[in-house]
Amino acid sequence: MKITIIVPVYNEQESLQAFYEELNRVTGEMKEQEFEILFIDDGSKDGSIEIIKGFARKDARIRYVSFSRNFGKEAAMYAGFVNSTGDFVAVMDADLQDPPSMLPEMYRAVTEEGYDSVATRRVSRKGEPPLRSFFARCFYKLINRISDIDIVDGARDYRLMKRAMVDAIVKMSEVNRFSKGIFGWIGFNTKWVPYENVNRIAGESKWSFWKLFKYSLEGIVDFSAAPLQISSVFGFVMCLISLVAIIFLIVRRLAFGDPVAGWASTACIIVFIGGIQLFCIGILGQYLARTYLEVKKRPLYVVKETNIETL
Image: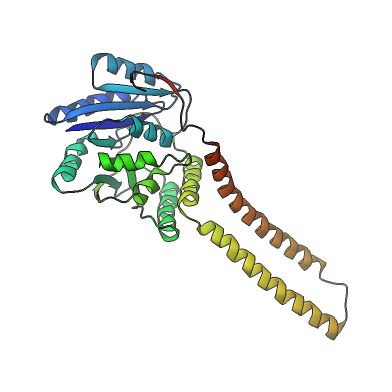
């Protein structure tokens, strides 16, 4: 059986050598399997692609695709799925936070236990800023409540899949991608393997708090219509409040006349209602923007160079 290992890379020159040595050690122990190692360089600005080319010159298993600019990890993973040729496909990061040593266990679960996919989840967030951990847990609870997909808390992109599952992912060629949601949406029988959080071998995380926040919003918008429903509820509630206010004003006018007072409360009400309207318009804008990007049908990535002859 052939296993393709997809490795998205963005500015990882400090960790690539250690990752390659560890991956070599693990694949060397799995002597009965054939391996294809597919590096996807996501427009790195350091020397990552040159290091990968060096690997390719001495290791025939290495294939690489280099993007013309940074298109994001989601695009890099999709490029890996499209260009993979293995009977099984694994995705892992190059910073060794996804330990290659888990690969034999994952392979046994897929081949011997009847699973279509084996995925990993962190059972601890040791070494992660407390604020980020708090919001991450809140996100998982929220998206599982408002969407039809099931995303396990602490889920990583590190997983091993059968070819049928990979083919199903490739068919979902949407521009706005949230892979954790896609993995859950397509189904298939998945085994979750827990492990303790592992710190990066070198370098710094490319995921700032703001990037993670935007990524979480993409996941919510891509896999749930709940925000649109919330805006509809806001509109209905404000209509009821307005109706009650109109009745109150009519009764007050008939009973007490029309004293000139209440300009401050009126201004507050106008600002409040205006804020609700802008909030709801913003929600509609998020969905409209994603529809706009999808209908343009731009490619998910642009290839600058590769050693894949058929690409």
